[in-house]
Length: 152
Image 1: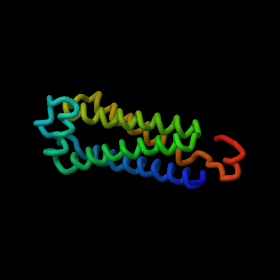
Image 2: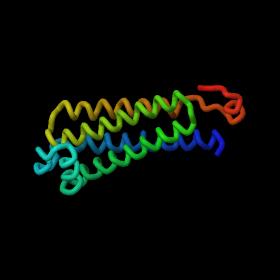
Image 3: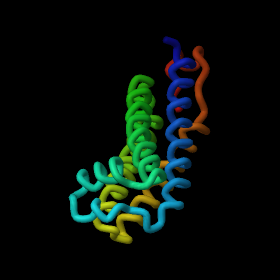
């Protein structure tokens, strides 16, 4: 596969993660007070499971989209590693950490309703959005430039 196709794949996954983050953000901002009472005190993963199985529809969608974003974010890192471009590897890896932090903070919030967890989810989402936007705007070398060893 040539470099142009690999960059296209990377950008497609980064765009998918960015759109997913926006969808999860919108769903999340409509959920005030809709955490199922049974989810509280179950621990991080127990609260996530309870939200998926017995939460309101918007919470279920928010949790499912969030989980799909984790998969998309991991795919971006894999694609960046295959490109062997340090800028893309660093940006996508940092974005993956932000996405994982947002997912984990969301589960902690469902378990505890702690304001700090909600803020961590919001800020992590904002960081991931910014990083994926940067990935989309970085200059992509053409095949000939890539073969000459020029870097970003």
